[in-house]
Length: 187
Image (cartoon, rainbow, N blue to C red; front, side):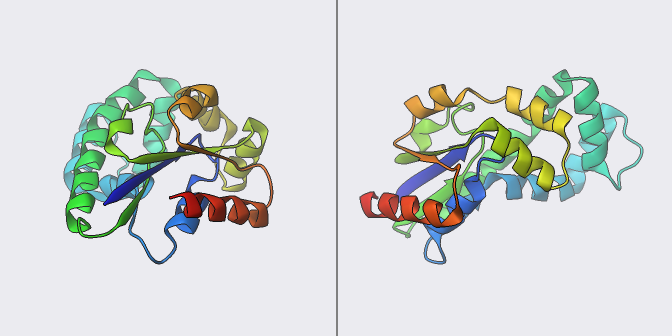
């Protein structure tokens, strides 16, 4: 089994790259999807609501974003709770798919979390900050939160040092597909 980690800065195009690389042929683990599942978990919801004194549980993510924007230390606490749960899901995914030749993992904080040893190959999706911000805002998100999350990530130069492949995703989807085809042939 060959484990391929796909990482990149916020709104760089990691999900598109991961989907194109794995296609319908290989299993794909998406850390962000796992986080969304965690937010639906009752134990997690109760723990977070108690810690942050949140009364409105309906819009938990929205409430947490407000808290994080006001107090950056709360993001560290949230990560301490969420990251181990995502790692457990990661392990389950590997066990379930242990007989597959290739496994793909989309993990935004792969290098920041020092998880490089868990992968045989690492692909870094790079994109200009202005383009990433434009993509992020297009999704209906806000600039302040983009800047907060972007500051938590390592500079692209540092991520490149730990990567086997770098995809500069500043062009068209057609161009991206050509780059991915080249990488697929090398894998």
